[in-house]
Image (cartoon, rainbow, N blue to C red; front, side, top):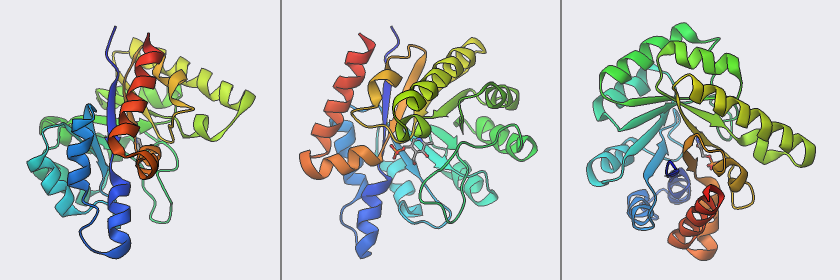
Length: 242
Ligand code: PXP
């Protein structure tokens, strides 16, 4: 069976650092702990307003961390230039609105086809594996495929934010979208909002190759430490795959 990779998003280590404007806690130190805890990748979102991760963080993460870096980025000229310069292992293209608290929905790959096409092409040509962060539906998956992105990351936020029948319906839509995307030859990732109580049904979907998890793990690390939180998440993912 395919091993399900875990990418840990370290943005919120930088959020805490930036609350005081100094250098502590250092996202690079967190990235080293993430590696020691057995995660498979580091994810970081360089936002337009630099509210957490900074340009210098991306520079240090690409130079000093052995794990693959997944750079989350908006499809803007500025971010494209940065990604082309740093050549991260992977780039996940996300929608970004200045005022939002977090990435609130998937990118409209179908509606923004012409804007996304040159970005996907340029990153791919530069050796970066491109994924598109999209909602779990066929229209978006078809658009991602047509754009030539090798990977899609399906948004699990609505599944995590609901309960009962609504959550079950979102899970079903995710299962269906995963199967459809995999049947088209896309590599499937998933993420957003996942925690201990929501990860297992997603991790159990066999065609998913990678989960990206951040906010919950960094929050849990306050109580149990980052390594313990990651190891527990890893165990839940492995149990779900058994
Ligand atoms: N995947 C993508 C594309 C994201 O934008 C985010 C949030 O930055 C995550 C995964 C991780 O979400 P969370 O921090 O809620 O675990």
